[in-house]
Length: 345
Image 1: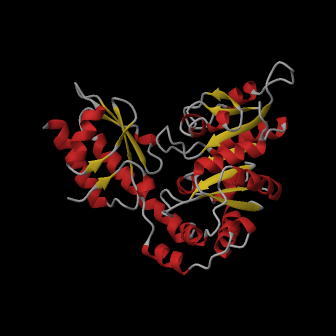
Image 2: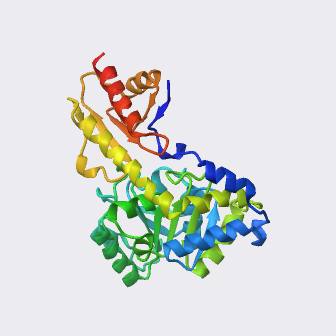
Image 3: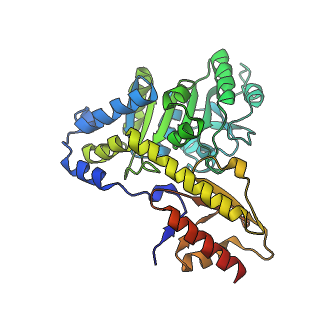
């Protein structure tokens, strides 16, 4: 029985081409800027995102934390959408490591309300922390992989420029957003001061993320990468995979994940008692609410797994399904059949 894993796209495995390139890669000490493949990856990422420079880091969580440390000082405050990954799912690093406070703003479409952001900026008063950074997220993880509208990004950028406050984008799945919006990554990144992209989710690299920004930003960020233990020495094997992850062909392949998620959403939508907002299925995530009497997410997931299908609970009634290269159209049909069987057995 094949395992159909719809828990997350981080299960995406490197392609055979990535594996071959990895073990052919020349190696050097990346802390001394002597690893050829890391240099090549960083130059490629900067070019693709339209920034001056880029910095390879072990993970997206570290990349985001480095960005916070680079933009701020201890005791500062940052503004985030209330369900931002940086706030809810990065183990409190901003507070623990950075000594930072967070001001939350509502934003059901993934970006905080621009008027709310403007209102949340602290006055210049000795009693208040300094508002030092605004953080955004696209796609938005907690809201089911939705892509916030560019119009709001433009408005928030206007506010950040007016107030002299930098803007950081958690773009772990930025290329999923680009495909949905049908715009190049550089167009989105052009509105922010720094961005983190993940190479190890749907793009399939085994390890790593890239943090991008101005030359001065990256120069400062390198010090924090070293402080946090992100100086990895011979990184060529990993970066060779990252280079292929950022190829146009590999990015375009994410459309298949989106199509499979749409197929899954539309099939589940037809099942009585399963509620899905099809208007919010933008990328490779599907959030499904199960209103069946006596439904328990933990019991349901256990039953699914016994049939080889895996998903994740968001609450006791809501299940999240995430598509990736590891799941094809046939797997989607099989998963739907299993879900129906479990619900009505």
